[in-house]
Image (cartoon, rainbow, N blue to C red):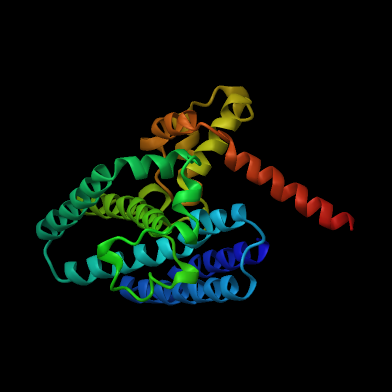
Length: 278
């Protein structure tokens, strides 16, 4: 599966250059959309040519790998739509518009809270039903989309997970934009100008933070969880502190693989060390 992950890594590296492309948000987003589409096409061709060695690999692809590209595509398309509509509006109208977008996303997530919980908690008990192409049940609202109904490259819930991922990214984006409007003199919000990019999920970073905290690796354990969250948030330009305790609850609710991100890091390091010894 390394070839698939390499495509995602390349995409994240390209997206990390987004601010160097232009100071104009629309230009930045168009750049990002283009690279997301390229990554998706590379993934599709690889799936068609190489396929998967087993069902577990197919589930991993449609549950995590494809949404890592498709979710970002949906996110940047939504940002493009939002930024196009808010142009030239005054501060009050812009703030009201962004708050309305925030409300609609939260409403969407609340209505689909069971799927959101499955996504956030890393559940696995329905994976074979959700992420194998042979079990795809096509909802009516998607039946006219040729891109989504590519039978070799589609399961119903890889789309669901991609939408949830896009919405979580958009919630963070909208919150930052509203905060900028409310505090115009303090636009360096939450490490927004950081030169370091966190390429995983926020909950992955939270898992790492809790491990460091419980192992007393920072200041002998005297630094609080919120302080660690703020420190890592500033370093990587992400908002963590307000959700850090919720992330702990979600990690605790996992039925299997509670430390899946730490386990992933361990396996990657072990694989690289083994390769270096060959």
